[in-house]
Image 1 (cartoon, helix red, strand yellow):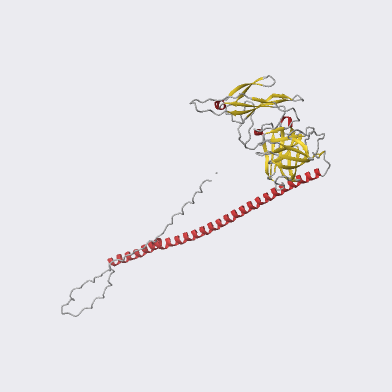
Image 2 (cartoon, one colour):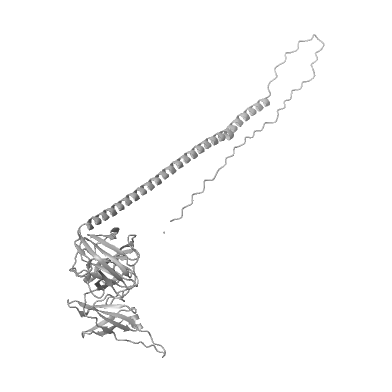
Length: 461
């Protein structure tokens, strides 16, 4: 794995067998200074993985002890004799060139990069409705039938008249006067028949009332009630629908109002941040450095960080590495930090701030020539521990190579605002770091990077 150059570090290759890579092993190494050290190789390592042992490198003039960096190589099995033979090469040590000012490297946090600490192996892992119940079936429909009144009349009454005998013949005397005729009495049977007929008429009328008239009247009343019920239901449904529509419209109106208010608040916040930044950079800066030559701010210099052609360069032939160079004699808490950046090759440039460069702790604002940006928080030299605070794309970035962009950050307490070409693009709140140095970076991803910088400025706020 590629790493930043440090003249106090020792580099070596440690060859192990496939069985040792799978199960883990340990080796005893003899260092150039005569020391002997036991190295534990964890199980599951891969070719190219690096083991870093702090304090086992060379001593720099300032007393800082470098690290021993071991690169793992897994030997392939040899075939042809029927048995598997594993070649085991002893590690080789290379002594770095004489000490030059420190250029520190941190692994990038994007996929494809891994970093191992002694005895620790790190892998590259980054970073539903219930069916609607159908309505019940309509109630069954009922039909009513009226009763039919049937009446029968009695058989006709036949009355017979009494029959009288032959007329009486008196003896031949003087004729006597004939007796006066008596009224004929009503037959008993006729009376009974009349009573029966009257009774039938009464009963028939009652039956007609109860079986025909009364049901028809009740049916008419029920129909009227049903009509009234339907009318009332329709009216209630219309009212309910009207209320529901009114409620829905009120919700829509309230949502639109809330969204409008949020939009107005967001716009007001952006305006306020942009105004604050513009006012700050309109004043005289606390630090103003053209970055054309070395000065009192003590920017890192060496084979990867250097002045050339009136600009400060960060350049390396390595890939998959983030190089940063810091101004050692700087320390700021609340400020605006702005610098002019040009990406010559590679993928990203950017700046670091509130940095503790000795312990690789800092915020990193990375800007790509593809128009992307990301803000990270690094807590140590292991890229896998870095935290992405925000990312996106910005139309204010001048994309492509050899394009100049002014990148800036405003840090005040826990609030961090990002700017590209003096235009606000994003904000986050983070309390990890509160003060430290400023610096710049180069990141080529899979391409060797070169980035140049000019006109570093800081305004205290």
